[in-house]
Image 1 (tube, rainbow, N blue to C red):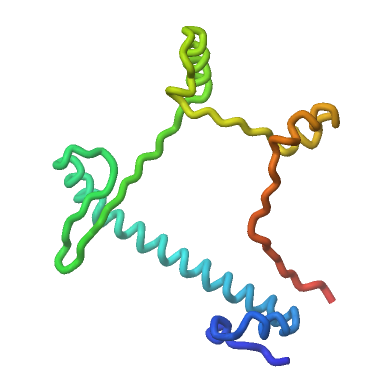
Image 2 (cartoon, rainbow, N blue to C red; image 1 turned 135 degrees about the vertical axis):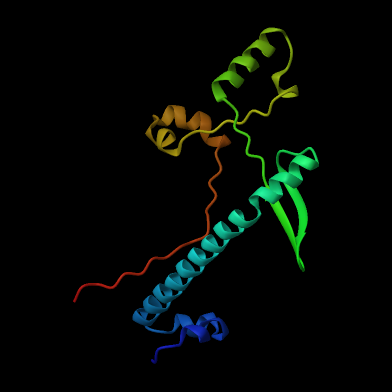
Length: 156
């Protein structure tokens, strides 16, 4: 079987690709990963340039509209710039737990004020004795993610 050019991969049916020798798939995967890394580096570099070029103007527009974060729009010549500065809120978990305890101690329902979720580390769950696992097992659902494969050439 012959090699395939990287620019032909997307138009080649997956079944045809699967029929190729593993060495060819290895090379295609590595070449594609190299292109992806280069494209990401270019995008990151251009994004840094855009930040240098427009961050101050976006900040000024946000201030003028009374916003600290969020989306603002302005024009630069024939280009409409949409600048987004998203909020990233981080809550102090210990302080929230203290507040939830105080709300409950006052007879109110914390669920009216805060969203509470429970998580159990899989490593801890697996280390528990069966008697404890059996209590929690009905609340546990296993889901799988997207399968992945790594290819490596064996040393000859």
